[in-house]
Length: 230
Image (cartoon, rainbow, N blue to C red; front, side, top):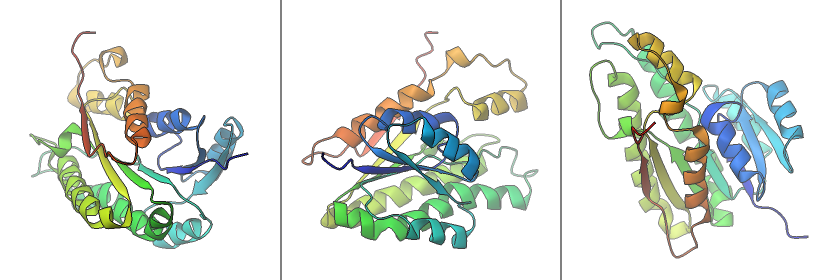
């Protein structure tokens, strides 16, 4: 029996990350990334082939310990993230620090630790960015700032790792029907209708497209926008 390729998906316990893990499950051994090992273990039991990557990505020691248990790795999907919104004049320092710690620094640290395994497999990194990685607006400076920086990171990583055979893709969804989106609507004082926004499974299909690209091609960037038709 052929050994399954191994995919690590961060933020796998909910939302987009959970949908990506489910999409990859038929063809990969999926390492479910998150903080709650109990929840992840329960999830893993429902997958054809899965394991747990339990770590708080803001704690380097936990990340180091979890990475030490990873042998082969073919695909690293960065899906964990936080949303902190507010006017620049009002948003406190800790909101900025948490935003960059989770949305950027954790991605950088995890990628660096796992690059040897990805190089060995001539694997792939896929980052779930955002439409906010291209434009910013009132109230979104912190979140957009992290996503602009994430785009810079993935662009540089793509060029640096090409010679090692590692492909890098950046997926930029617009508003997705997740609990984060529900929270954003609440902060905006707007009615939330999940059916009006991109579904997590659609973002997962974009990840599948990038992951399945044959070796002579790379899906470098992919933007997904709400159609406004629902």
